[in-house]
Image (tube, rainbow, N blue to C red; front, side, top):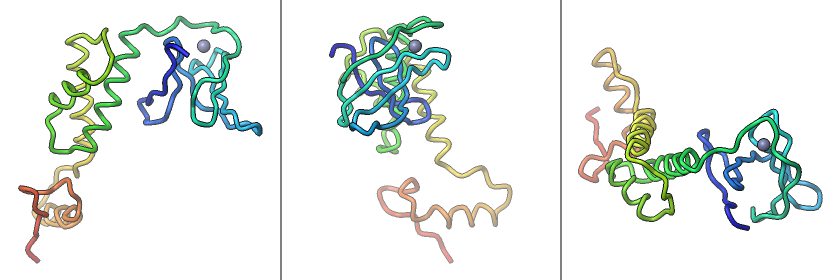
Length: 164
Ligand SMILES: [Zn+2]
């Protein structure tokens, strides 16, 4: 099936994309087929996939909303792929992650200002992985102790050692 793929939502959930319409997972039926419903709440179009998430059939027409445009969908795909890569490769610079992702994926409608917003999304994501700013020396030390086994705070590839 053309224009059918599985993408990731902003909340990290899987979505089905068919002809630029997004579908959220509803349930797996007794016959093993998975049911997905149009992500637009006021629309009842749905589709079925097989258990390996390949296309099976679609049901109903889309009503009450316009289809998403290519730019918007491609921006979402790029942003979510880059966010995932940034989590896996914490020391790689965001711009490098974006460039690699652009080279390896088929996203012909991505514009320069889309890259800026993707870059911001990666930085926001990274920031959430770090602790909040400490307000005292004691707090700073206890925060460091809490994260010393976390590979986010590797220093020159060695684990951070804190004096006790
Ligand atoms: Zn719809």
